[in-house]
Length: 291
Ligand code: UTP
Image 1 (tube, rainbow, N blue to C red):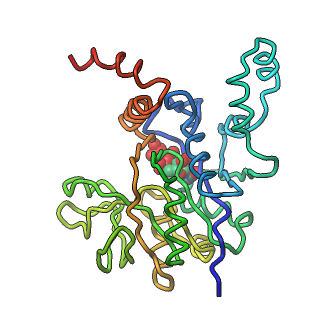
Image 2 (cartoon, helix red, strand yellow):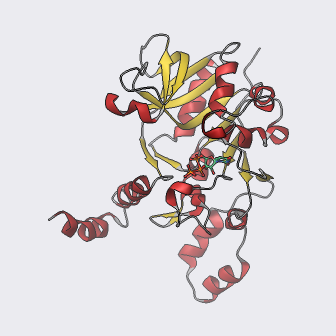
């Protein structure tokens, strides 16, 4: 039987963003700006570059601006046209989604990532899908989501994108256990959430991109609350692992955790220094801080 193609992505955006308060008191975390665009714009571009055809945003209260970001801003567009600011106008128009390409479902309470993904079940239906955590901005030559889909095309089942961290930091993250390690794509034997120091099964941490099979939804429906009193995606993935294969893909790229103050700062600096139009000015502006 041929594998079903990954066409849809779930992007959960209903969290409270407490780690970057008060910045996220009225602005959704996912719309915080890195260099010149919201975090979310990087992620949508990444998913598009992977051939994703439909985006399912799981939103919540006070997140209405996210929907507006992906719509025409008629007055602004008219003003830009009147002022002859055609370059930025063209860019805004080019980045708009195609009609019908995005769906928005409501998670009425932020009950956890697992619950957020479950809210997308009817729109995903019976096909494999990507989950993209938008606060993890992944800068990669080949889009991180594309790397995950390519791995899925190769081995099927479920894919978890991972990356190495120094061994003394593994206790802060979800860490994967591998059956054996040969290259970047390896079959998993398990996963541990925040292992005690010195006990992690590897130094590969779960980094915010997944390809999952639709059978996860039935498990999420009955998932009890776990760590942090939230319905955890990890707990249902554990249960799915009993009947389906999971592979960990060590992706090639740089991750910025924009859900965290220092990560957000790193993203601004790292991506400004890579931006062809800004890098020289950014370097000149930053240099005095290090002298
Ligand atoms: P995080 O745990 O990083 O986001 O979830 P958070 O809960 O907003 O952040 P903190 O810890 O309070 O600072 C990863 C992604 O999952 C979404 C978040 O919006 C974020 O994009 N999420 C999380 C939901 O959509 N619903 C939830 O119940 C929890």
